[in-house]
Image (spheres, rainbow, N blue to C red):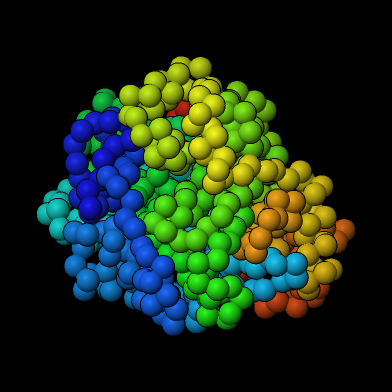
Length: 482
Ligand SMILES: *Cc1c(COP(=O)(O)O)cnc(C)c1O
């Protein structure tokens, strides 16, 4: 399997080269030359497989320059650091709704699904490609990627990591998780700006020739969801969820199910699109946005316009106006790099582009856009608990609301964060929010009766290691001091 740039640069790369590079030099993202297929027979054969076996079957199809032994070494991480034996359990609620829990990894958000395995794939890639220079991995985060990347890459040889996060745009627990992150090879920097400022600055650093001279001792890379090493592992749990429903006889082989995905950078839902293209019986993918509903507008009108007000919401990991991975979907739908180049040229110049109706309709066959207001989000948290005795975090609640509004068949709602990462926001649904976050955690524990994960409890006693804050146009200066 070879990988190419969405922007049409004709060069081909192996999976390990794409993972090590992160982003193409022509600004494009790496995509597989063709999406591999999987038959219903193969799906059926995996019915009794555990997470690791499903993972091996999927990864083998994409990461063809990794040996089976290497893949197994990387996949072993799911046994080492995930707290649930199923890794991604599916919980059945009422009304044909199922919840796929993706937050049983060490940092309690779905980012662990890819960011626990990716550092191993990355280290193997460096070996395969005989890389001598150290890698410098730059990360822009809206809250969860940062901690998950710090956890995955800490103390890895030959790798340095700098994480940029919006200082006022993350939850208290997210901030503490990052500020207390250990590891000799990591830096964590707060930015006076929002996630899009962090993401744009990181993209520009890659293209800044002058700065790259400073950074000549490093090979630059990214651990954001633009990295292929994030995308591919996310395909696994779509299959695993389907297989679990099959095993439990909730569905029959070949029956289509829908997935509702709380969306920000479009990485998670894009993995679902790949799963469907591979042959998983998926009907619709529901793209659930919060009040920052730029994708909802795009999916309904074909116009993507980032020139709009930015809202800070109760689901901060989805507070994004530029959804980078949409570029990959457009690449597959347009099948024409020239046209894609023109769209993104227009976007870079004007902050906006319009997709031809013909292609929009093609996207709408699979992807439905919806969005949830802050009030509806709280109502959904309350109602879901009331009806099903199931507590959802605000991100999950947004996908739940979109699923209930758009339901056509059995629908799997992706649950992307543990409730205790967003305790104060969850408590708002019950009118119980207090100021001290650790008090909120206790209060939430009383209502939900869900155990507080030890990684949250111990945050209180960890030393704060990272306090630097910079202005959004000063990110480059930090890098000059490395
Ligand atoms: C990152 C994140 C999302 C959004 O996922 P994308 O791949 O960026 O669309 C949703 N919920 C949570 C909790 C997240 O951390």
